[in-house]
Image (cartoon, rainbow, N blue to C red; front, side, top):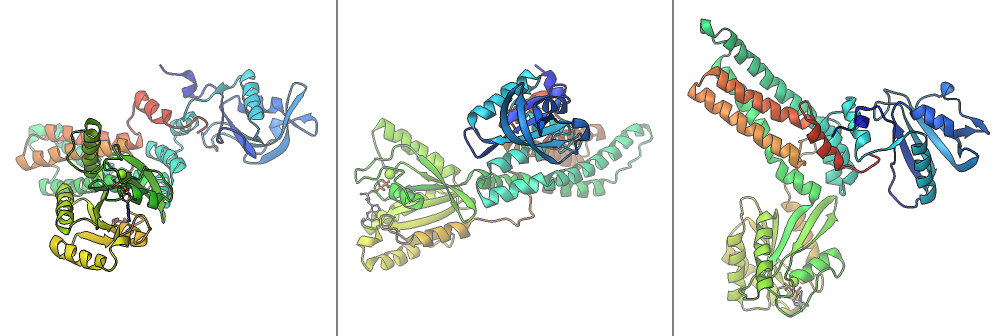
Amino acid sequence: MLNSGLLGNDTICAIATPHGMGAIATIRISGPQTFTVVSSLFQQHGHPFDATKMVSHKAYHGFIVDGKTMLDEVLVTFFRAPHSFTGEDSVEISVHGSVYIQQKLLQVLIAHGCRMAEAGEFTRRAFVNRKFDLAQAEAIADLISSESEAAHRVAINQLKGGFSKELQVLRSKLLEMTSLMELELDFSEEDVEFADRGQLMALLHETLSHVNQLKDSFRLGNAIKNGIPVAIVGQTNTGKSTLLNALLGEERAIVSDIAGTTRDTIEETLNIEGLLYRFIDTAGLRETDETIEKIGIERSYRKIHEASIIIGMLDGTTAYESMLSSAKEIVSRADLAHQQLLLCINKVDVLDDHGEALLNQLRQDMDNDGIGIICLSAKHRLGLNELLDALRTSQPLSHPDVTLVTNVRHYEALVCASESLNHVQEGLELNIPTDLISQDLREALYYLGSITGEITTDEVLGTIFSRFCIGK
Ligand SMILES: Nc1nc2c(ncn2[C@@H]2O[C@H](COP(=O)(O)OP(=O)(O)O)[C@@H](O)[C@H]2O)c(=O)[nH]1
Ligand SMILES: [Mg+2]
């Protein structure tokens, strides 16, 4: 159902600051009736505010008065269309942050003809009024939810339009190819080739590798946005839960010497020097007949598979042979081409000087440069810094200017675009008819265009903006 308000006929209002009590709160209003409604409620020095003398982008001090009741002393900022966030006439009213005042002001605004905004409706109106494209609108949501320096940096880059510009360049190259090919179709009787096949191939190759590079950046981009997944795995009682607690600095997981205590996976995020990590404590890997523990172990294997970094916990107090075999078991589960593996010999506090010798022995026996091995005492927080250093250096941090794709919707569109371009490449190689090739090109253009919203449907927009908060 299409809400008429989404076309910008209604004047909408919402609280734009977090819910609950605060020092101040901001109420946002946007739409054609904004100035009329606000001037009827806003007074300065006991006189109604004269909207005709209003200067845009200026804050005015005064009072909100509803009939004879004074509601609050406020600051009102006016934004005249099209120079506002939404592109419409808008106002921001800063009130004292009482929950009562906020609610009451909303009620009064609604009584004067405003409507409560839907989730993301301000941003949606801004998009419709071409204030920015869809990828930039989504970057605003990412910016609001960014929890680390890295996530913030990626969102800001997307908001500035870095990603959108790259897509534009890609699309214009593809459009050029398409028009050359379609020109050929128009002259098909005369059997001319406007588009030099070698040149087309080169152009295509360039575009395809760019699309693939963007597509592949999603693994890192997604990790930065949601936390780099680090799975803590190993046999039961090696100290996995103790390590999670030590990293978080709180008793998050139950630690006990009873094997099989952690049956489910526990996830917690931690910001380490501007990067968000998602630590996952897993059920210990062991043979068991216990149904619930079995499910937990299954889940552990899945978490190992999904992780970017695996911390393999080994119990330094057990016999060396069994430690070595669990180390090998963990290595066999890891995908060393895509995952970073870090083996930790835990409980070195009870090993005296023996720890170092164990470490050297294990290094020798594992014989793999790609695997980091360190000594640790999770319980006494020994070697934690070394572990954190290893985590930091294991992350392939990208150059700040390189675009990282962080949004699943964008990723899926890039996967589809890449597929279509692969078809184009095959088509050119096999010399199939131009009209079929240009069909695949059109498809690739469609997918790339869907990211910035050049091509979009109401349903897609509805889904995207419903994920925003009300007031944004
Ligand atoms: N001495 C010593 N004991 C530890 C250390 N880390 C964990 N433990 C003990 O090992 C047992 C199992 O720990 P837990 O974290 O529950 O292991 P998990 O099954 O791998 O999660 C508990 O009794 C912990 O106190 C350590 O660094 N040194
Ligand atoms: Mg545990």
